Length: 410
Image (tube, rainbow, N blue to C red; front, side, top):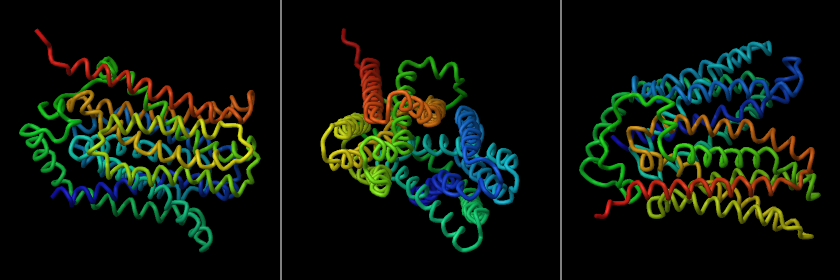
């Protein structure tokens, strides 16, 4: 039962990644066909981001009422419908309209799935699942490329991905009874035994019951600390993805082809790093994965910053940054029930998703503005500052959680 449902969730994470890079992969052709400026891609991604943030914040109430399985199925179905709408859009305003369910579906399923896995599966699965997201994000540009070269055009790529999402929706609906059974069995296991050393505070807690309002969730001790940590990490990741190639060319004098290759190593490092982290996650624990990840990113930032005549160290640093970044996101999500309790985890993970999308939406444009004033050389400093911010706030949270869980001595 566990393995069947886990297989479905793995496929769902690939599905989560599929739409994320479709717009970027197809936009060079799409904006010409739609007769709009190239910069209008930002309008589409902003609408998607707003929908994702809002649905992430609402995910806790929806999941408590309808269950993670149904919310996931409906959200994937909503995304499939939006992608189908994209395929038949011949005006820019139509893309903007379909971008609303596109974002709403993505945010709800992301929060619901992440919380379900954090509650019911080991840390290794959280890392491997997020690496499967990277697989999906890597596949969709290939689908777009195939559609463009085969004569289907960019609508064909959206049709292909929408069909994949529709099939997954049917599979999710078919397996809905499994979600409840796994939920009951896992809850009993948590009451009988401690799942692992990172879950001692979680094991004795009852299953979630009752809505946790946003204002109440934000007042839980330590929530602001983890939101800041998550914001810093996602800002670091998205800024590196968008600007690392430009930095290598503009500040280091690397050729465009070499810069593009090594910039892709950051994403490859994230995907590979999550596979590797999954192997050791249960032994190392979420805290050490977060701590080690930020430290490794900091070391990589210093390697990129060093004013050496050779660019080999900077290029290697970029790949190492991807490896360091890999386990941070999954470990933050997986540690949420431990840090804040099973009853609060869905609400807090929803807020974390919103914080993540806020960081990845706002910070890359901010770096663009800063780099215009100061210069592209500021890129590794920017990464370093975000890494330091992330580890400082995550360590403050660890101290707070330890203090709350420490036994009272008389």
